[in-house]
Length: 66
Image 1 (spheres, rainbow, N blue to C red):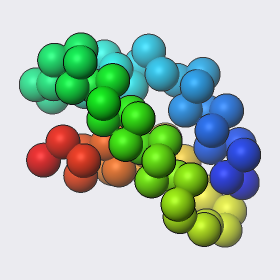
Image 2 (image 1 turned 180 degrees about the horizontal axis):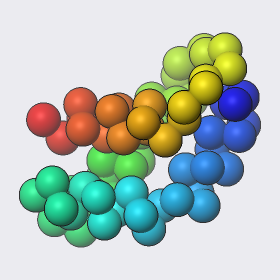
Image 3 (image 1 turned 120 degrees about the horizontal axis):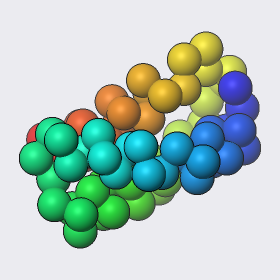
């Protein structure tokens, strides 16, 4: 998946990522901030194709939280 595809996936899976972060202890405000951090991290990182993009985004989010 390309970087552009990652942004599309982030947008389409936003609600499920917010729920996941909430289950990990984030408030809704924290989860929103974390997803914003994920977006910024994806923008600043040059990446080649990613075979499993959802785990990558979740990992970025978890790293941002903890």
